Length: 316
Image (cartoon, rainbow, N blue to C red; front, side, top):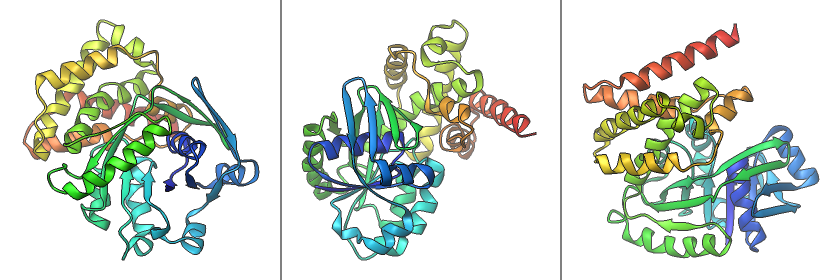
């Protein structure tokens, strides 16, 4: 199959390398020093169970527009930070028009698919989440990744809306599995995304605020209660999107977090590297959705405010 990785950072680079190593054609969209390293020296991916080092095809956005057509690809995989989703889709608006190529989001948050669908329609939008993967660029052209790196995907907003799309995804899931990417299909991908937000809001902002890894957060007697409260507020917020998260969903995801190794969250890594945080896409969504319902998310709002103030102090 032919894949385009829209955002060849830690996560996108890892999945692209897996697919390329299995014999598929992969084009990587990148920028800056990382792009130059990919073009000149190739891509290196280091994972406890997978090593990749090879030449790759890599372009920037203008190179993509000038040299390729969207219909040349079977699937576009969007792995940029959530805050860049709108700008990427807007920049590719004309390039994506008049074709049927679907876009799979493997990003944090619950709004990316909404943004994608606003540009290309629900039928071409594939909801997705990357589960238990840590991936980071340690130097231009070199990626370090950890975790089982599972993928869950499904027709947006659920399989019953687009049964044909869901059927077509079976071949994509088979392709991913054969490439060493454990992949399952979800009949209700929107709910799956909100379930992942339980984890992301539970540990991501708190880790960025405290500098602590997931194991420390969930074993500290005070902080672990805060993690659970942050997850409870996600369940409240999900009601605004018509998603019903039960206490059993919270408990299941909480137990999953408690089983994590000592992982640095993506938000903590971004803060350490001075990169923008996905705060709006994670905690901001919880506060905003609760506000729509006339409810409060006091712990999420507090963590968000403290983190924003820390970041602003650091800029002074």
